Length: 300
Image (cartoon, rainbow, N blue to C red):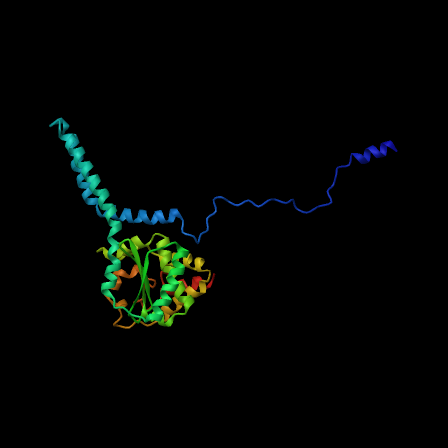
């Protein structure tokens, strides 16, 4: 009997709970919400602007570099020439830094240009409606000092542009009349999302700088409207409202006397909600096309 008891006591203990062991959840400290603009994303947009400004000064930089190097090598002829070369290089470096910083300020006058280009539109009710939507969404996106304007035009469009140290939101009278509230919220959210992404300086500089259409698009950023849609839709938590606004833009036939049929619009297009208002055919290979943007939001 003692032997049997000892053999039984050697049997391994078997838990009655045969389910999987509980593992406490651990949050990934490196996870980032893809629909929230990151600091790295904003900094990359700032670097694009600085690289553009540096390329514009590249010929002068090369000439000054060659002259400074020649003066340094000239020490074998005149002892004080290297000092002159260093002074020239330092002065040019200071001027180059000042010039690069000034490029970010060139688009700050775009709000004034808009006010001079457009005529005021809308009635008191529509202005109150726009300001109410803007005030609520500006707090959500962390953008302040924004003034709202309704401009008279039969096309559906909107833009948020710098106006000195502030921002100005321009919405066409036709959009205010024909868009549902949730669609208007989507448009305003999209415009504010561009500022959260750090896109306004790039787009505004592209609007006021003389260059080719391809260079203008490269500076403003191809596909950036699609990215702003993502951020906006995630923030308002109703992508179909923004998709509906884009659908209406895609179906609209542009009047010949609209501002959005002019050469000025072609230069400013990259700051607008619908960057291809003057395009009659849809291009589903272009991330900035309103039809493609609407389809993407409808599949969320």
